[in-house]
Every structure is written in structure tokens, then in C-alpha cells.
Length: 367
Ligand code: F6R
Image 1: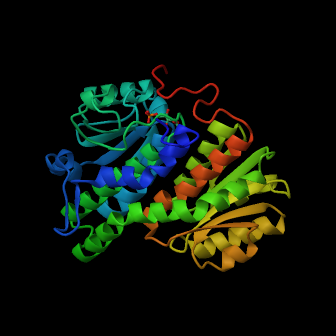
Image 2: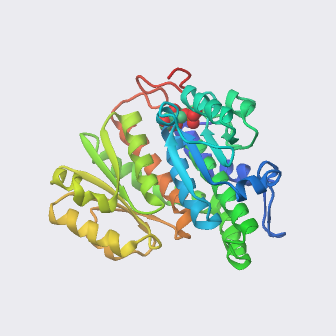
């Protein structure tokens, strides 16, 4: 049932070209220039006229939510806030019937997310679900929603569900942007064509980085700390990369927006600190270059995720992982793949139980 892979996690990482494609199937109609999503379309005026959209989630799904904020604000120009479900529900949040609340949950059973949604519903908000498990509790109490069709995710560390969540959020942002007139037709057409090709980009990145990342992982089996840095859309991707490593390898890791480094974490950098930097060309590249210079001046070990043909960051980095170039909004999907592999192989070489990490459960049904 692991399809020849040693662990479910690796199988699920490799399933991503298909799971992303499945999530778009029947929704993204490139030739017609249409995104079909009944859940959004039936309530499109509620979204359009929302005071704001509040995204609630936990863990990896919360990271997807942060990227959703960048997507929806950039393309649909609707204000978005992203909250941890556990914080939101206990702070008497200000919600009205003019708000739209989107819950993101792979399992659809997370207790805090469920409770936060119930609260939002009581206050009259329109509630929307992005779940992977069909007919789950969250999917059932929402007013409308879109399933990620990633298929069952068995590995406790979320991988293909995350990239499927990003795919749905991208579709929603583009659909709302087109409807609101904030995303012009020409740009819409070119973005959806690019989105349609993302499964191929992911396939490509799996092929070109798998062995390389496996080798890089060998050098970090005894690491005790890691920093992950990114800017813009790749700041949440850095958080997610760090979470994957923590969960399955038990190495302490932190994700940071790269520019925040000088406000504290830079004090940690010495020759023993590995730092993963996500630095695609379209994503504040020049700013990242200076972050890398600051790190190298302190002898940090840089593992850089860059676009093919990159020179500046690559010439300073200790390890270089190349990913294909995309519009910035798609780069977290593509960049996440080698980071999943890195966490996976470091954990495997440490002899950890990758599919069932200690202390973790696949669905967190208690708060
Ligand atoms: C990370 C992970 C957890 C979940 C979190 C939310 O790999 O698995 O952080 O993302 O518990 O779970 P769902 O999405 O089921 O609500």
C-alpha cells in the first residue's frame, strides 16, 4: 500500500504532481479561461462584499492560510487575517455577519478549528471550509466549501495536503480577483496557464532534487538547530519547512521572515548553524542576497533554494537546490517539495519513525 516507497510520507511527497492535478480537475478550465468553483460562485457577492476574510487553522494548514492571505490580498484585494484557531476562539474575536471565515483543515476534525468555526457561525459570519477528508465534521458544519482532492494522507507530517490547500487558495484568489475586476483578464489568463503547468513543475523538481537533497541530508544528521528564511510568499514556506523538520527529525528549527533575522536570530549564527534560504528570482531577490551576505559573514552554513541558473546566491551558498522559475505566487508550492525531502531524509538517517513521529497524532481532536 506504500506503492514501493519506504514510508507513506515519501509516497505522498511523490504523489504531489497527481494530487495537485486532482485538486484542479474540473475546476481549472484553461482553454475556456474559467475557474469553476460552485462553493465560491454561489456566494460570490458575500466574498466580494466581505468586510474581511478571516482564515482559521492550525499547524501546516495555518501556514497554507498565511499564503492564502498573500494570494487573496494581492489578487482579489479583500483584506485577510489569518489566525490560529486556538487563539481566535478564546479572545472574544470581533466578527460580524459581514465577515467571511475560511477554515482550512486536512482532517476536518481538528478540535480548535471546529470550535472557532462554531463561534464564527454563532456570530453570523459566513463560514467556508477547505478540507481534505470528505464529509468530515468541519466540512459538514460549513455553509459552503471546496475539498482538496489530495487523497488520503497517512503520514502524520502533512505534505500533499498542504500543496493541495495552496492550490485551492490560489484558485479562490484568482476566481475572486477576476470577479472583482482586481485581476485583469490578460494576467488571469497567463496565471491560470502557469497554474495548469504546476504539476509538471513539481514533477520536474522531484526528479532534479531527490538525489541531491538526499546527499545534502547526510551532512546534517547531527545538527541540533536549523533556521529557515524566506520573504514574501516564501516566508510561510520557510515556517512550513521548519515545522516539517521539527516534527519528524526532532531537530529544533525555526522559520523566519528573512528581514527579521537582524532583529534577533542573527545572534544565533555561527559555523554550526545551518540556514535554509528560499530565494527564487521573483521574490525580493536582491534583499535576500544581502541576507545571505550577512549570514556568510558569520560563517553560517547556507542551503539555498534558488531558480535554475541562479548565480549571486548560489556563489555564496554551501549547498544549492535549484527549482524551476515561476511567478512568485506559485513558488511556495515548488519550493516546498525539496524542503519536504530534506526533512524526510534527515529524519530517516537519524532513524526516526517518519510516518508516526513521537507525540503526534494525525488528527488532533482534543484541544
Ligand atoms: C503538520 C501537521 C499538523 C496539522 C495540524 C492541523 O505536518 O500535520 O500541524 O497540520 O494539526 O491539522 P488539520 O489540517 O487536520 O486541521
